[in-house]
Length: 416
Image 1 (cartoon, helix red, strand yellow):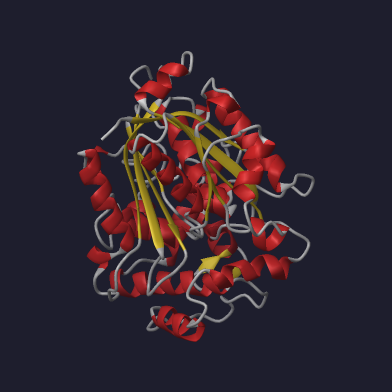
Image 2 (cartoon, one colour):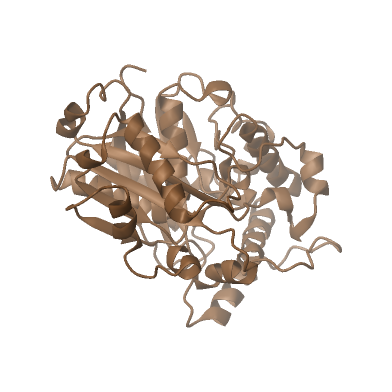
């Protein structure tokens, strides 16, 4: 395998940006990534653009990637548009990594973006209705909501306001974990409180207000046991990364000193399984492949960014990555093991719950944070001595879990 490096990263603030169109967001993120890599548009030999809503919400159903790259001055190169639901940005990154592995290029660009805050809120929420098999909607719903049976729902803990059906699904995931492992609502709230505390020091986060566990529990309900601060918001934003081979890195003046090595990159679908087979969960399968590819294990990981569309997602995914024992993530979160300064900090960026979740940009936003951390450039949210970082990002739903999972592992630059 060729050695692949991340030479530069860029990311807009995630949030509500009514004055900016999607191409402006893309341009800001790509410009930052190029500057960070000491690169110019003409250095880029290959590009992938991850997005979900660009066509649905903004009308550019076809070729949004080629149009975006041409607007930025990139010509006569392969450009691909990638859609893999919430894992679209991570999938663009993985395809860039594959292109470098194949020797198709020496300098590649991965970018992800979505502008989801639009006047027609119903149309924006309708995007989520396509995140599973649209020919079996009732079957999908029944199968997933069945996971939540067996846990009583207290009065007043379900919102009467409209929200995505996925919130009911995430709530069912919560109740399943509670029933099987004794996970408490307070432990789930501890994840959200930790992530909102982390986000205070992230200038690119959508929300930067700290909450206590009690404040999280007292917040407006969404779907039991979830309250509003436990859930990711609708967001606008873009993020980008410049990837290089050894030869490509040498072309970028001074780029070698801060380059982060990609130790593993895995994107995959899962397999048919039951809820009683967590060892066959899609993220667990992808993590095992990534650890094998990197020649590392969970004990080597110093920090992680995981997909927390709700706080429960973090608990499920740290178990899938082997960073906590099955059923033990809730207690570990409550003990502070996933906080900055804890055993293995998770989502030092604030996670999707507070950093924001502009679907196509989410995975590359996670990578932006990990690269920043491994370089020692995260300021007040810096994880001391971080050498190995892991990213997990899921998208869509098939069966009882995500439709696709991405797991990538990164290593600190020698100069850091």
